[in-house]
Image 1 (spheres, rainbow, N blue to C red):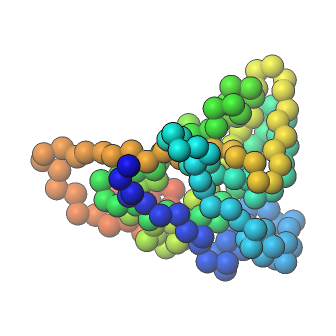
Image 2: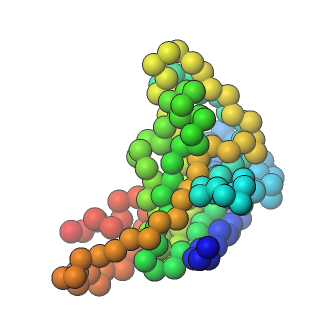
Length: 172
C-alpha cells in the first residue's frame, strides 16, 4: 500500500475554541480533558480500507436529531488524493445515521487552512423506524477512505484555499 497521508491533532487552543462553539454549556477544563484523550483515526484490520474516527463524547440521538462534533483531528494528504468520510456501515444500516453532507470530502489543501484543517463531523439520526442511537466515547462513528483523483487536461486552476466549509467557492 502507498502511504499518502498522516493524521495529526489540531492545537489544543483550536480544539477548545471549536469545542466550546459546538457545546457552549461545556467548560474549558472539560474540553481540555477531551482533547488530551483524543484517539487518532485508525483501521480495524489489515484489510480495512476505512480509518475509523472515534467519538470524543457520549451522546444519544433520537430520530431526526443532529450533532456536530469537532474531532480534534486534521490530515496531511499528498496532492492527488482526497479523504472521503462515510458513516460506519453498521450505524448507517441499523439507524440510518448519516453525515449531513452525505459524504465528507477532505481536500489535500484543507490541511493548511486558517482553522488548522480541523475536521468536523455532523451526524443526523435519520431513522424511519423510530430508533434512537446511543454512542459511547471511543466508539467509531465514521470512516475515512483515501482515494486518488484526477483533473481535466485543460484545468488551469491556481486558486489557494483559506477556510473551511464552502471556502472553495467563496468570492467566485
